[in-house]
Amino acid sequence: MKQTLAYYATLFYRSFSAYSTEELQKLGLNYGSLFFVIYTGKHPGCTQAELTRDLHMDWGHSQRSIEKLIADGFMTREKEGRSYHLTLTELGLKAFETAHDVFFDWDSKKLTVLSRDEQKTLLSLLDKVAKGNSFGDANV
Image (cartoon, rainbow, N blue to C red; front, side):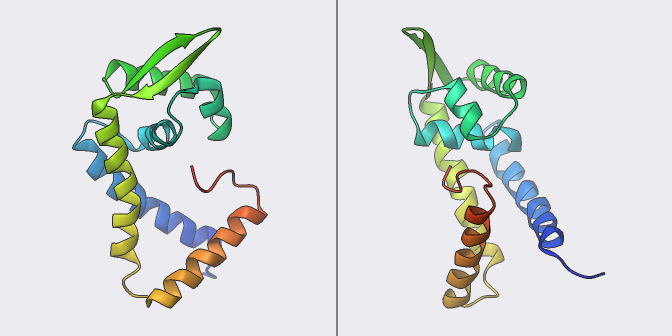
């Protein structure tokens, strides 16, 4: 089989998903909550519409995920004017730190076969591909 970027992306996705799920389950979160927590942690007071748009999510999925995060005590939703604003609770802030660490921890485990220069080159090239293909905000 000829290797493609899609092939490697699938391998990495499976590995990262399994690793992050294992780490997040310690807090009672699942992989699907990862980006909601990270986005809200980086954009405190955001609206659900902003989060949904910026993460390229379906409105219904976003609504259900946010409702669950609120019910589980990770997030609050306060009405300000005509819109609701999302913030992380103390538990949510702990989840934000863990979720953020998951990315760096996984990278440090998986990229050990590359030198520091090779790691920088790889990430630089992937960033170029991501920005050139409108994959959304790579910094979310």
